[in-house]
Amino acid sequence: MTASKADIERMVAAGEWRREDLVRVLGTQDADAIETLRAAAEATLLARVGAGVSLRGLIEFSNVCISDCLYCGIRMHNRKVERYTLTDDEIVASARWCAEMGYGSVVLQSGERRDARFIGRLVDNVRAIKEATRSERQPDGVGITLCVGEQSREDYQRLFDAGAHRYLLRLETSSPELFALIHPARQRFETRLQCLKTLREVGFQVGTGVMIGIPGQTLEQLADDLMLFRTLDIDMIGMGPYIPHAAAAMPADWPVAPVETRMDLAFKMIGLARLSLGDVNIAATTALQALDPVGRERGLRFGANVIMPQVTPLSVRKQYTLYDGKPCLEDSAGQCATCLEGRIASVGRFIRYHSWGDSAHFARRNDLPVELPQAPAVPRLPNVRADKIIQLHLKQD
Ligand code: SAM
Image 1 (cartoon, rainbow, N blue to C red):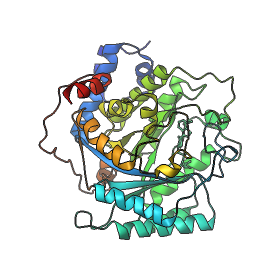
Image 2: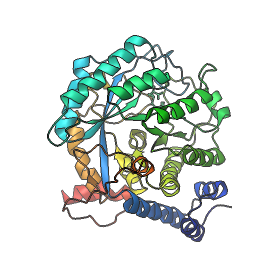
Image 3: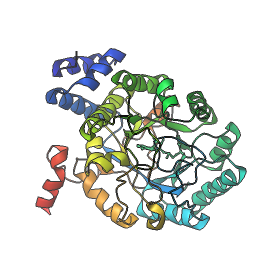
């Protein structure tokens, strides 16, 4: 039986989020029930984290990859991709641009490599970015999140010591069986789980996430994903819809759920993550925007509080295509920046400029001060349905 509005109100009041509750909410198609979930998630966000949205400039610095994830456009055996690695100067210049724009943090993301040359350069780049982005407002430079896959404890430690302090490593799914179906045998679920534990021990703020709507995935598995995030006491969540890629290696006869179904589930997952995990950072991911022009804004309204604007140089951005329909392929980083402010204001939220935007969950767990940023004095727009926002904007303009 799926959850009604009254059921969700009861679950919110109880605040327990058992597996069967999660499955019932994920399965509901009742518009009132979904709106109740959304409103409760937004209220939790505002109470526990505040209305500020933190930005991380996304620098996709290399698409060279030794992994072969079946779903991914840059997997090693996709011979159609032109491989690139940005120069050190390009990486540092992209980060400096972010600092000048007040983004506060960057994400360095790439395909997976574990060789000494790759790690050595990354360590140097982290150090150089820290040096190059120090300012009066950010004396310790921009915050650096890494997303470079499974590495050894020693290498995680070196990257942490160099100055990176957050790390994203998606589990992709909490089901070892489903994981095995979408990865080659040498890539193991247990390794990824162990890496998340190691990252925590090293001292990183640790993020993980899953793809939503993987062929064959069940509502029970998505509920288990949320339960596992809690068991791992994760600090940050980045999850979005699975999107097929023409040159990926997923078997052609695996059915992909319609876009509306994957988006509906993605928003419910964000809302449920906010309600069940409270004060973690949750990203409104690019994949949401790939399937819906206002997908990220809708994600914010379901309780997300982080956006990762594209700053990868335009010359290589097309080569970092994980799935078909990646947005902002033609927009310069400057254009992305201009478009962001209005988009975020349109859902009554504001950008936390010049801030690392760390996870409040990590701060509370470590008895560090938690900042609940106050909104700058801008008028709030009326509460409109997220899918009407762009039209509203155009009319106002
Ligand atoms: N190599 C690093 C790693 O594995 O963590 C970072 C890069 S990896 C390409 C970043 C994320 O892209 C993956 O964790 C996966 O969730 C996502 N991704 C890849 N292919 C995708 C697809 N077809 N649809 C949706 N997300 C996808």
